[in-house]
Length: 393
Image (tube, rainbow, N blue to C red):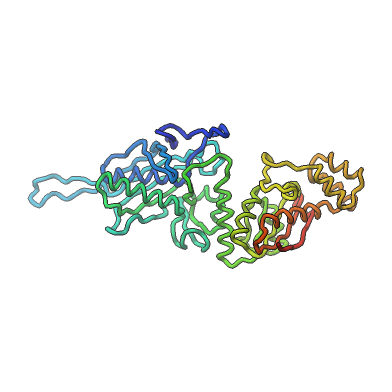
């Protein structure tokens, strides 16, 4: 099976700033598949490669991995003067997603679009095929019951349909069914079940381009998680760095699943979105080392982009009553957890001090927004090693 191409028909491009190849979103792949399928429906021939126009004007080309044309027989004339002819009634095209160098769970997925003629005046009607989810909760940018094809990909598909209709004399009234092979299985590794998108993946993308390690899909899921919680009337949400901290947040606060935000390393994404779309209370829960980075002012907690500063932890320990010998031991500690264990043994509440400083960082980002924040720091076993009680802006 061929992978999506880039530029004028080559493979995914290379970002000059990073040396990494960019890739294409599921929305771009679905648009390319739709354009090829609608062209075949009108002409009987699939364009391969097929070129589309992205929202910012780029025109990548995509190789087709699937070409299927369904034909229906026309009845012979009443006088039998001509043999039965055949015309296309449905066309399916498929594109294999190339996410470039981004660690995207949908990399290599086969995205198909099946196009059929619709009723005159209906425009483009979207359907969720196998592997594409359906919206079941309010708060998303799509109505409950709609296929999980996001607004920008929908517009890209409408534009592609209009382009093909103008070129080949079509009416532009079509039913587009998008499907993803094994999409329901892949979706279990995403936020979709928690967001109420059931049955498969979402067709995503705002630019059509996947930027390596931008983790735009994860950040978008954080935002949609906040939207779903607000729509459900939740007044308390928890941003958690992983599954262990999530379990602790549930145990401490009894929060329902739709109030839990899989924050990962993206503390800044949670805080910046809540600043614009507030929920009255936020709990931040995570490992001590990660939250010590937040305490020190870092909003991206990934190890490649921020580090635990033992000197900073030593200074916090001094503020908590540590003598110089203990402070030196903290500064020389192998890990953040070793530092907190040394302080606990000496009666110095380093965990609480880190939690309070992390809360202060969060409130600084949220300034002006009515969100109270508490923080829970844990060790690798899930034991709580530091707490900061709720404090408002």
